[in-house]
Image (cartoon, rainbow, N blue to C red):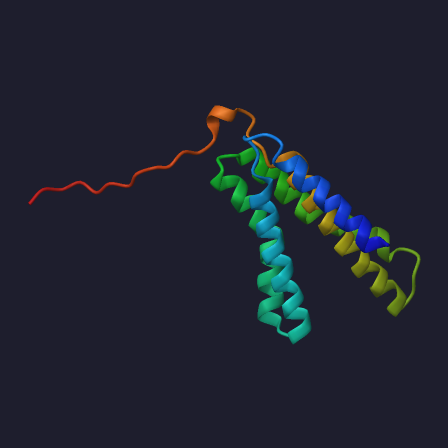
Length: 146
């Protein structure tokens, strides 16, 4: 049942993210998907480098997309969400348990906070405040004469 709810939230979020043309939620979702997949592969393969790469992607991927889209306030908000909500989730989840139970609840809280940060980022931060400020293709030229 929880998987169905998560899927429904994701579909609604992605549909909302691209309701307007000045939004770039799908790009954030793609970054998050790649980061979470890397993290899952790292857990499955018991690979520390993949775990670190996945964690870096979860924390820094979306803020980087915001910066590439020219949305510095969105990048700052995204970074705060992606660090803050998992920390808060870990504290809330880990409170009230002992031993391994506490560790499990802490991990669940961290994951829930991370997923909440992704949903909030995609739904509310992945947009241009001014549609005319959307980045355009830029030509790189090198000057010189022969």
